[in-house]
Image 1 (spheres, rainbow, N blue to C red):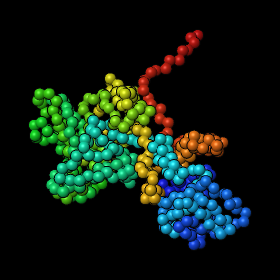
Image 2 (image 1 turned 90 degrees about the vertical axis):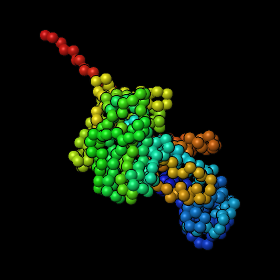
Image 3 (image 1 turned 45 degrees about the vertical axis):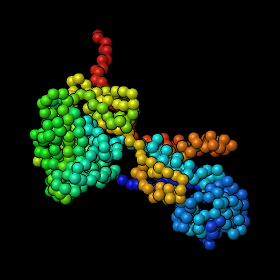
Image 4 (image 1 turned 120 degrees about the horizontal axis):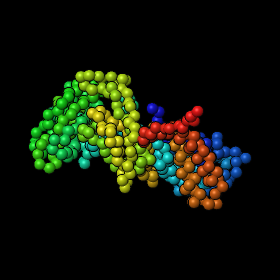
Length: 438
């Protein structure tokens, strides 16, 4: 998948008339940039860049900004105040009068997190953060004799089935990452997890009876060997006892030097018909179709991801409960022993969290996103138009035209790159067409 940097996104805004790009040519100084190619000429008015900001984007002073003082068009010098920290070199940007450079970066991140999105297939699971989309660690995945880190998105393979893996690196034998949950005595469960052994020999799924301090006997092959993704599929039963029993799912590397990539963990109760989606799914609008995997890889049977198919599960209700969503399978359809997925509208991550310093700006310039550059550039202009119709009412006509133009392009790129329309099949009903009898 192609990626683009924060700086490349901002440079796209030249198409919308929001900034001008240039390179310092000649000897500059702390109080001015010199560009004898673009800024020098008798036909250039001295007031051309009044009320504009300058941003340095490479070389000495990268990330620094300053306000234009005046233009000396005879020498190609653009004076600024306050002065830069040193003599600038490299590239620069000049912004539309009154437009703040940091506002552009903020608007870019607002567009990534509010406008730009795509469907992602994510696992349906009773475990917290089973897809590694949220931060790992308490209260979800906790390690023992190991460290863990998310790899992706994207993954080079098999990216069609999961966006990220949890790479667990052992510091001792039988190191693991795991989490606990409660079940009723005698309740049966199903677990499936893709796995690749990057170093060492054996990966193993262990389900621990925490209440009874013993490992639960699992049906199926609970181990996998070798690099390259296969899948571990097991079933088991919560031990008998009084009240709810605590069990723990542990994704284990047997050898002390093991490095294991674990994919998303599908854990469901057998016969289950109702399951909550992750807390980040705040509305039904973020939920698309539901699928069940067919011919999926599992240890000892089929290790070929290319044979995997997915069947849509119809009539699944999406129930809004406060700021959460629950999937309700129809009465006649319980969840099988198989991996289930749902489509989630995933917005892109913001590139920056801080915008005030030269270091913040230059760091953000280098960060990449998978969002197509045309998509996020149109969204950025849409956000800026919203903000600056309020901040610059004297320029209302320009910002209104920018808002309309960028919205038109945002609609185009939403259809091209955004989540395609996915009609959800929510009920079966036969259609009766009356016929005339003769």
